[in-house]
Length: 220
Image (cartoon, rainbow, N blue to C red; front, top):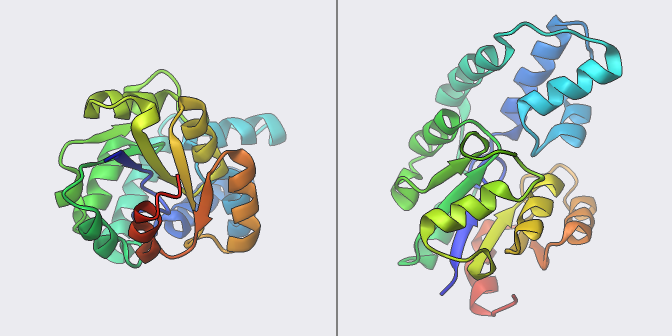
């Protein structure tokens, strides 16, 4: 059996709308006004630091040194009140067991750990969480997937990655993993499916409950 590596935001937990809400608030407070829809289209899958750098270059904006820490505090407060697991993900993971799973994320480790705790998903992953903080380069570079595979004792080519963003699919593809593109939390799933396929996904799917069937069909 392959080893499964899941992105967190938008794949395991429906956190992207919450994250974009906080991002847009912080940008506006520092003179950059964009919509949540534009933020989602431009920055899903990227690190918060890379978003701020793009805004610095594009608008000449400056941000306080504690911007990342401020986002973490605000977002974790939202998580505690509103964060939900992606529909059907508990059932999908139960169906794929006893296979072990890992997480590879461009979010900070503490945020991923909190997300899994709040949504009762931690039992599936244990300590197998790798984030951009553990590697030299975040997604779209392949480092986080290579490290997640190494920690789990697998070669990247023996791993199946489930990703929802072009950034994440690109990173997993570069790492040599096999990639399934998940579109179930994207506001434009059909359009996103084409983008994920172009970035290197073997196929896409919209409902997390369909994942065990795709694996059983050996679509990869």
